[in-house]
Image (cartoon, rainbow, N blue to C red; front, side):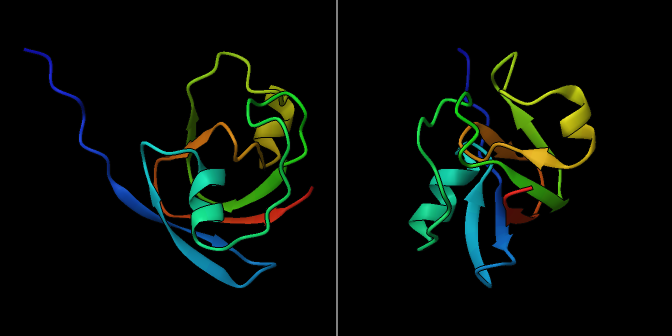
Length: 97
């Protein structure tokens, strides 16, 4: 019998909005931000349009997509696409880059 991994609850902080929300590890950051009242910009929700592009100031995220719509260089510079990024720890981010 395969069991599903248990989601870990982290927090996501949007510093431009001075907002802190619950961010389960099994849910995209964008959804967590929106559920917490954020007005984070978004459009496609699949990692291609880059409307939700933000900057990670603190955190580790994972992507379930092989190509999340940002280059390796952008990821190394702290760029993140919250619509397809899942938190691996507490997250601090800023909209835009």
